[in-house]
Length: 349
Ligand SMILES: *Cc1c(COP(=O)(O)O)cnc(C)c1O
Picture 1 (cartoon, rainbow, N blue to C red):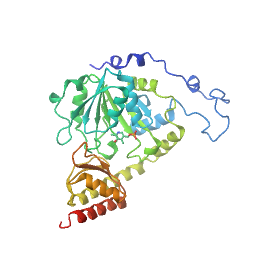
Picture 2: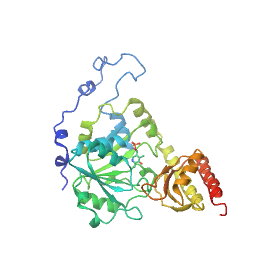
Picture 3: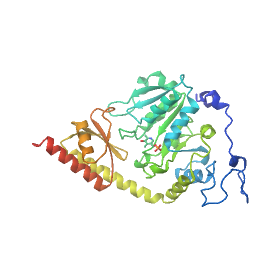
Picture 4: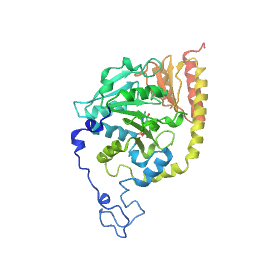
């Protein structure tokens, strides 16, 4: 059922990728006069490895996949953008996503002029039954699913995701930006049976490296080759590669920090539960909480006035603010700011 060649835009299928000086020569030499670099410097005077071999090998090891099934992007946002450009003919093709969800799928689709079919998640933010989905989902070039989902925080059911993937003609992109906060294993393990999966992960959340801009796509090598053929040759810079390799060498530390954040999330959730302003806290498998307030906009403004910024998602989920789990001190500051607001506006409670 899955026919990759028929999914690719014709102009991308016939594309001759730009070959940089370093693509033409990949061995080791004494004298490099091929790339118009300055001859001296601290290492950064040289272009990065455009094939990204060392970094791909290190990440592949950590994710237990092969380097050939790995794509590296300037953040996962770049991977989303390149998927859109490789597969969606502007003004013609469509993608599908399940709302409320991460906003970049629509932004990238709008830039590419791809039509977006939005299907609402059910009341507990899970996938509706397959039979209830519009046929446009199954015919979409790309179907975006985010698990754990942003901004709702919940994991989508694995079986439901895989059943959907089985029925889709296009690529099914599973955004696992928050997977490291869960006990669930990545759907990248299912690539053998589900050739149309593309898994997105990122160094921006659990790895604590949002500033270096590094995201990954894990997919069948033939899908990776398409993305590699259209990316800028040096999309991952040397400083990013270096910093990511350091982090990968200290993976054990990251795991401990993730556990701390999860403990803090559960403590914050309990403290919020006892606030008279809070109507509901959705269960979270991520490093944030989606919280329904009595007066979300007023709470949002009151927190801002106390120099605390949270994300107002009431446009997507009525009454909801999305609160990232901070340090214990930051979470305490949030809790006391809410108390101050509650006592000012509901003095009787
Ligand atoms: C934060 C986040 C990302 C990360 O994007 P980067 O470009 O890698 O920083 C991707 N997807 C979702 C759903 C996110 O919440």
